[in-house]
Length: 113
Image (cartoon, rainbow, N blue to C red; front, side, top):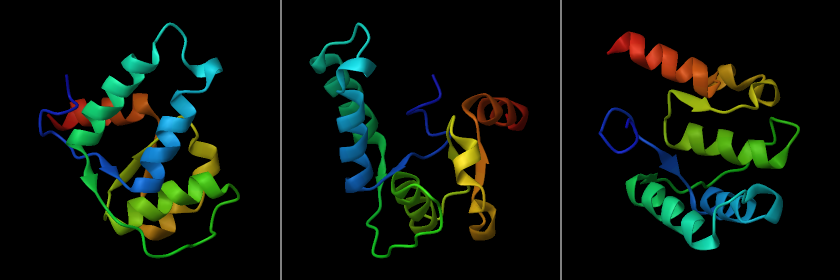
């Protein structure tokens, strides 16, 4: 398991954590997980996270929810954002933030080890 072994950091802000919780608990996303299962996974990820406050709003991306993630990445000085939604983060490179799909991230991460 790579999450929690110190190989990389997870950065979160309070607004993003609330967004994760809201989205994960939508009935169409729960699959076979209970609300308690979702809370347990989120609590684990939240306990590992490097919490970063966001003090600015840069409407660079078309979707406000995507801006929330980019703003966090900039404030936390993240190297990258890992998302299935690569297309919607076009322009993030101007802030020095690379965008990877989960597969690309894991592939590049394994090459570095």
